[in-house]
Length: 114
Length: 113
Image (cartoon, rainbow over all chains, first blue to last red; front, side, top):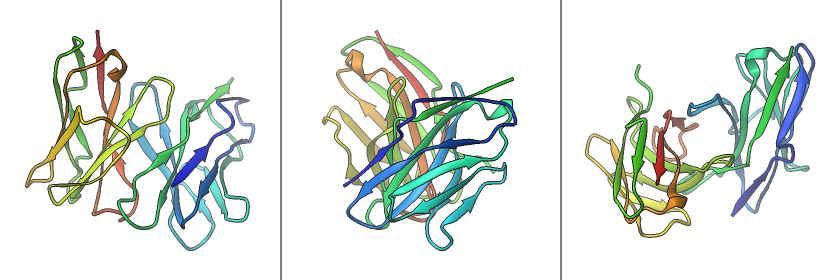
């Protein structure tokens, strides 16, 4: 079984400042890791994923996350945030076999301040 | 290319009633999963359908049931609705289980009164 912990329920940050959203997971098997973003009254949009290969993965809009197996973490970072990044961010884990169901964290609300 | 389509977008039901939610997966995807997202929470896995069979089920009572059709679309049925069933229900599809990341629809907001 897997579990995901997102320690920060809310993260306020000023525009153009860097941000890190933390995600730690627990699993007895190999995992795939994901970050999804959810804007108000919308579904989830995939931000980035780690399936295999390089432990540093990047999204097209400037976010990156690094898979750290020893620390069981997959923190999301962005060097300079924009107002439009204000949203809820969810970290998810799945096993690498079976049905690949996602286990989600409780989410981190990123609020970018002008 | 249409993504995952869910209907209806909003629904209000009375406690004890039954509801059916519908999902059309992204073109080319044949695996559909359903998630329940309560207000302020992360999504919780309900079940997954592949090849018209339920492959795995989360910790949800038998009041929650589903179906997948030959065209890969899916339905989620909830019987004997409770107030606690009020949530955003999300459908996610993928190209076979484990093939890349799931694509989510915008969800159906169910309110039970």
